[in-house]
Structure formats: C-alpha cells, structure tokens
Image (cartoon, rainbow, N blue to C red):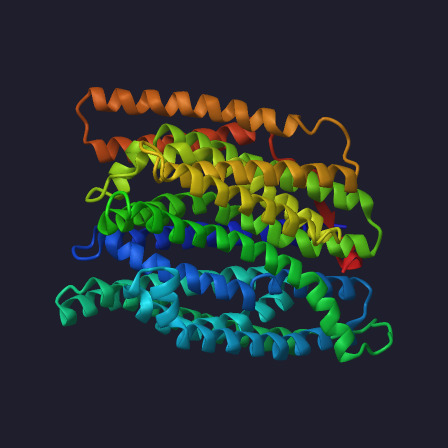
Length: 527
C-alpha cells in the first residue's frame, strides 16, 4: 500500500499554518491599536479588560466543547457506532446553543455592574455589550468544530479560525478609524468598536463552518456501521458533560488567571501609582507581553487539538503502540517550538519591542522575564491533551486550580512591593506554570509507560536553540556595527535565526515522520 502522512499530522500542520497566519493578522491590528493616536496603552486597557470578561463567559459556554465532542465522536466512529455519533452532535448543538444564549444575556445586561464593580474600569461597559452576541455564535460553532475534528476534518477548524481572524483584523482597523473620526478620537468608543469587530467576525466564521458541516454530511456514506443500542438523551448529555466540564473548568481557571491580572494590577497599583499609570501598566501586560507570549502557545494548540481525538480513537481500538508514538511525537514537536521561542524572546525582547511598538516601547523587561513561561505552559498544554485523550479529564482541573491559587498569592504579595509592581504578576505566572507542569507530568508518567530516554527529546532543540541565539545575536551586532537601520537589523537577524533553526531541525533529524506515517489501509481501519 502507498504510504502517506496520516490525518493526525495533516491536522497539526493545517492548524499550525492557520495559527501562523492568524498571528500575523493579529499582530497587525494589535500594532495598529497600540500605535494609534488616542488609543495606545490606555485604550488597550479598556479593550482588553472587556475582552477578558468576554473570554471568561466564552469559556463557560464554549471552551472544552470542541475537544469533548471530537473525543466522543472519534471514539464512536472507531467503533462504527454512527447512529449515536450523530445523536451526540444534535443534542450538543441544542445544549450549548442554550448555554451560549444565557451567557450572551448575562454579559449584555450585566455589563454596567461588571465594568464598575469588578473591573473598576467603567469605560469597558460598551465593549462588553457589543461583545455579548459573540458568545452565542461561538457556542454553536464550537460544537460544529468538534464534529469536524472527530471526523478527521481538522482543516475545517483551521480555515474557520483563519477566516475569523482576517475579518476581525480588517474590521477592527475599519471600525476604529471610522469611530475615531466620528467621536473625535474618543478612546472609550474606539475600544468598544474594536471589540464589536470581534462579534461580527465570529458571526461570519459561524456561517462558514455551517456551510462546511452540510458539505460533510452530504458526502458521508456509512457502509459498514454496527447497530448499537440507541442512547438516551440524558445519557448522552451526561457523557458530554463528564468530558467537557473538566475541560471547561480548566480553561475557566486559566481565564481567571488573566482576570486576576486585570483586577489586581489596576486595583493595587492605582493606590500606589495613580489610576492612569495603573491602567497603562495593565495595558502593557495584557496587550504587549501577553500577546507575544500567546504566539507560540497558539501553535501548540494545534498539537493538543489533534491529540485528543487521535488518542481517543486509538484507545478505543486498544492501539497502545500508536498512542505512545503520538505522545512522543507531540512532546517532541512542543519542545521544538517552545525552546527556541523562549530563547528568542529572552535575547531579543528589547529589539522586538522597538520593532513592534515604536511609539510605546515600555515593557520589554517584562517580556524577557516572561520568556521562561513559554516552555512550561506549552508542555503543560500538550500533556493536558494527552491525559484528556487517555480519559484523565480531571487532572487539568486540579493542577489549574492549584496554579491559580499560587498566582493569586504572588499577585497580592508581590505587586505592592516597590521595584517589583507589575513584575509580581509575571512571577506569579511563572510559579503557576511550573507547578502545573510538574504535577501533570508526574501523572502522565504514572498513567502510561513511555520508554526511557525522554530527555533526548529536550537535548537536540536545546542545543540548536543555543547555537541559533549566539548566531543571531552576532549577526545583529555586526549589522549594527556597520550602521545599518535598526529595524532592518532586527528583522534580518530574526529571519536568519528562524532559517538557521529550521536547518538544525532537519540536519539533526529532530522530527522522524517515518514512525508516524501510516498506510492508507491502516488509516481506514483506525477510523
């Protein structure tokens, strides 16, 4: 049989490519907002504080759904239980559309209370109101994405995310420009309209994925299905909730971590530095540092998204060797992405800020300090995907809650200290991620036995990252010495670093696709 890369690899690659494009567009509109006269760090504080509350309610109504649905559907597909697979999808649509609608209503009518009493940023009220319909739209699209992932059509999720970001980036710039002229550069209105662009973008993304769903349904023909007992509605809901609730709580806790910053940083620092300075400090954390840290994490989401249905599918047919191969490959890919990103952001933090935020360069020290978070958070994210695929859904909940407690303690105790201030929030993030990783890793090792030698997965990317960093810094210093434009020096050095690292990946054979390639026949049987 002719060999080909399996759907697992294709799914990861499609999501990674889409996330790369998404981040490019995201950086474009983030740079635009940060450097826009009348918006800047203060506008980002209003924009992001509203967005974080929206993300919190969005977590309750939709996060965890795609992975839960894809896990159940992939298991039933592998067992050829097609009737109950379709019932899972239909019931999920009704259940989570209802939850999403409730979240939409809560955010819309509670916007005034949330902005004044919780965030203590009254200007965020209209941002919250305009964001509220997006919760309903995303709740429905999340179920359809889970169905597509369970059907091994992960590329549809990738495309829908990409199209949503294109609309969001374009509409954000258009809406802010129009509102700027109509409101005479009113920061509150501009921030609200920037968030409204998110709502419109999620609506168009929903339309796209609905069309793709019906296209899939028209083409699927079940020839060898097995007749299983027709599961009751309450039984299906129970299964969905058993999987989705722990995932949702885990994501909810992570979202709380962001809201902890939005609440504690402004609330504590405004009594020390004044309200305006406190908002700017939070704006730096939320709109600069967090966005840059999210870049490598977004690539890693591709790995965890593809892992859950793939491991669930192989677990359903007792393919232990296949599970171990996927785990080793996923951990290797995570380290190949995480380690150079951490080295790069640590070494080029100041240059990155000079390049991306020429009109608001404050905060590069925070990025340098935060770079260590990347490795631990990405590994933890991948391990969560592994454990969820293996049925250990509650691990992410326990570790996330413990990490959140550590985060709160660090914020409350460190932020008021003179000379630390906003760095206290980053130290809290570091400690939280390290503890979560250690616990999750120990549980994974106890759940499934992987052959010794896992440390080898770390050595190659670590060695290549060190060489890449030394090489790129020398190139940068050489260009600066020859009086070449600073921005050109930065871009050229980063580009060379990327190419050099990719060269090392292939020369050092960090990725072995032959072990995870499958024949067309094996792919068919696994389904």
